[in-house]
Image 1 (cartoon, helix red, strand yellow):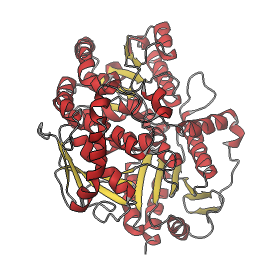
Image 2 (tube, rainbow, N blue to C red; image 1 turned 90 degrees about the vertical axis):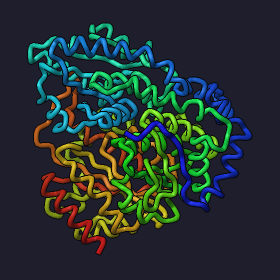
Image 3 (cartoon, rainbow, N blue to C red; image 1 turned 30 degrees about the vertical axis):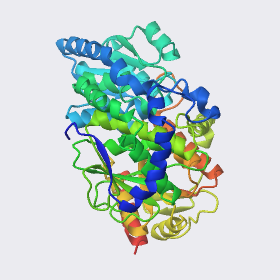
Image 4 (cartoon, rainbow, N blue to C red; image 1 turned 120 degrees about the horizontal axis):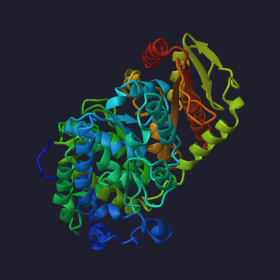
Amino acid sequence: MAGETTGVEIVDAALAGEAAPFAERLVADQVASKLASQDATLWGPEAESEASIRLSWTTLHKSSRPLIGEIEALRTDLRSEGVDRVVLAGMGGSSLAPEVITATDGVALTVLDTTDPGQVADALAGDLERTVIVVSSKSGGTVETDSHRRIFAKAFADAGIDAARRILVVTDPGSPFAELSEKEGYRKVFLADPNVGGRYSALTAFGLVPAGLAGADVARLLDQAASVADSLAADTADNPAVKLAAAWAAAHEKGAEKVVIADTGSGIKGFADWAEQLIAESTGKQGTGLLPVAVEGPDSPGFADAKDDATPVAVGQAEGAAKIAVIGSLGAQFLLWEFATAFAGRLLGINPFDQPDVEAAKKAARSLLDNPDKLKGGEAPSTVDGAVEVFGSEGVATDGKLADILRAFFDSAPETGYIAVQAYLDRLDDASTSILRGEIAKRTGRQTTFGWGPRFLHSTGQYHKGGHQNGVFLQITGAVEEDLDVPDRPYTLGVLQHAQALGDGQVLAEHGRPVLRLHLTDRAAGLAELVRAVQEAGE
């Protein structure tokens, strides 16, 4: 891990100069100290009601302390019973932080933030005798998480295991899920602070419980956050969150609405995936915002060759093309980026605590689930090229060879726009799909994001509909070899996954965004053909 030193360096001298007036504005308005004291008026009257119930994250390094003992006691009890495999069912903020925490600490956590039947089946294939599942949801109504709960409850029962003893819950006080958990007699219900939104919840029970049960040192994480709390609350230009937010805002004003994030040896694993949700969902609305682009490293396309529409940010020491470098331990980085994102919301003139466009895709998916005929072969592909079926929204060219279709589609993205790759596949077995991000970015010269569906719907999905409307969207779906029933629900996981892809594509098309869906009738063969077509399209 990086040391306890935390700071932000604006490497680019021109950007540092342009950021100074924004930092001065934040300091003059005492935004840092007001945020630390949970002043809900900072983002204007329209945001005040939402902000008033969303600011408890600023003091979690203190208020979450009692959880440490509870988590350790439960972990000890579980281990005494031979239960040492932790599965987490959660979406968005309920899964991204625990995954970063455990990966950074080098402890095992099986994360289910998918509706892919193969990935869920793999989790079920683990030793159930040693397994406990943490089901995390503020309300319990998240369809993916509810499906996982149902599937695991049945699997435990079928294996002769008392399901209630193996299901742990993290939810908000008084939620429908809290009531259901009490009725079902689940072993333990952790009630999280309700005045924290999902993407700011890393240091609440949502982040700490699954990570701590898996063996991560969550006490140290809180110590790390506490070590920077005073500096983040200071009304000075040296406040690292003030510096970071001011640099983002200055770059955005000059047309760099994308923030490209690469790790440069910080010791933190997967931080960009967590920051992606925080930034995109907080700022991507009202036709503005910052689009985070998580890349593989500082030499990757999009970072090393970033143009004027993007700001490369290093997590760790400044390297290569980085214009900004942010150093610090994981707990410190969590709090720093949260403060910086809230400050950026004020500078951009938006409410960083709502997500007005997230529900649209969920509604569209539910509508399709209620009308299953629309999902069963109702749409014929425009083109079939080997193991790839081609579908497109209105105005998207779908005739000819796959390489030609892709070339035309990529060219439809503005030079300063972006290409979003959305893979509704198994992010373990189909992990190689992620190479498409770099391949496309390298060949098109456009900023390219990659998201696993439906996981990204709880992350960058808000920006796609509410942010700068200059993206084009490449959906990748795949044939399901063995589906999984969702107990007491009229759909399977495969049907749900398909509905989520079609529903989100429908909403994007309604926003006038180009959507190209490629369905792999054979996942391995189709992916190989797709990679070749991308390479050919760039020639």
